[in-house]
Length: 139
Image 1: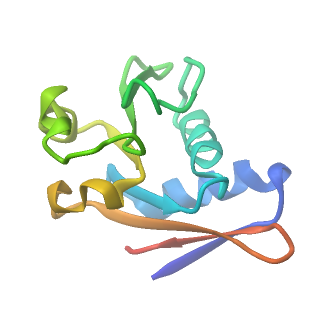
Image 2: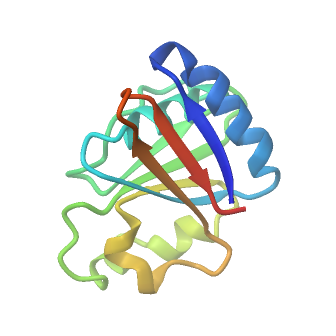
């Protein structure tokens, strides 16, 4: 388990760069944390480091957002908060996204845990007493 501490919003860029370096060739991430922990904010910072040219927003109602990078690559951002049954993810082609070779960032992955691929990297964001965030990465 590796840790990244995010002191404040100004520290997000550095933390995102560290995360991407740490991730190496891994592309599939299950990002957990309580409501308001900063999952979407962290994913927005990761997408910026990866060169996303699209606006990164929470896909709570659409389940998945697709962003393009300045190199024309795709990044997929999932939010499973509103999933009621795991089977719902197959209706929009979850497997195809995961098998695409593109970056896939998933919020609320615990709601589809049995469907997560073996190669997924588990990430947990925790809000500390001083309002900093600790990002635990299971690499």
